[in-house]
Image 1 (cartoon, rainbow, N blue to C red):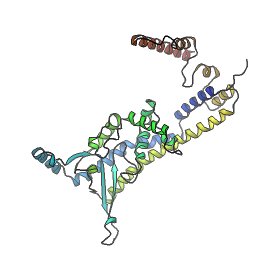
Image 2 (image 1 turned 120 degrees about the vertical axis):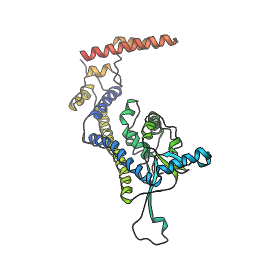
Image 3 (image 1 turned 135 degrees about the vertical axis):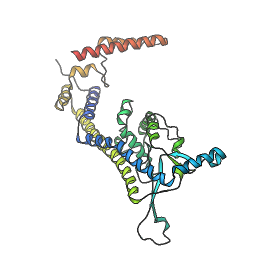
Image 4 (image 1 turned 180 degrees about the vertical axis):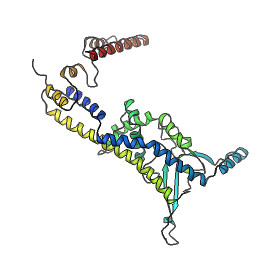
Length: 337
């Protein structure tokens, strides 16, 4: 029997199957990512407990209740209590400074407990860092919704482009992030995962502008704990990128190697050498996404669908149910064999 020649369709099938294998494979880089990710919940719990203590010192609960009572009595002019999840913490510099050097007397920084909160130094530093953290933390959930949570590492060497923008928009939508009124976090339009995540980290603050404008005093040790919180979040971004980089490098090398192969048997041999089950018959039967389409039932259904396209809603539902039944039966038969 003549050897089957390699073509772009076979190359795509082999490459896609290998990437699935690479993502499921236990590697040092993947484990490092999973280890950091596993620590995030406790990191948030511990750091938020400290933030609650610091904020309560600045805005005692009895003062908050007094303000709420006055609002009920006098209305909107005294509406000064709101919930927030981002804060400016500050501590007094211990170094001897000139009397006129007021700018450097206090050290302050913005800290945001929201899912999309910055992992960098300031409130406006790299909005992308919040996205990177969210995508890394909820990678599995985004993959399950056919989104691409790895877009930032994959596009690290590229400038912003339509593909990257589209992927980010799809990710944000899947996570329920609206980016609406992000500076008054008690009034945002977030839903779903982002809303559920953010609502855990609100505290009562007295003030009237975003992040309630004023800084909240803390000790240097407390401030350094808040800074470590950001660093740990940044470590998740880095660990995620390192793992994805290894997969991207494998994908590039695999694609380059497959271009040199003339016959399908060479691709199958490569996959088997890499520990990935693969045979010619399987590759021939499936399309690039892995769906078996060339058996008689599926092919006939596909061909019938190319004509008489005007159908009622009930007919469309019936045809879809029939098709799904055939696919399930075929897949079950294949797995048994």
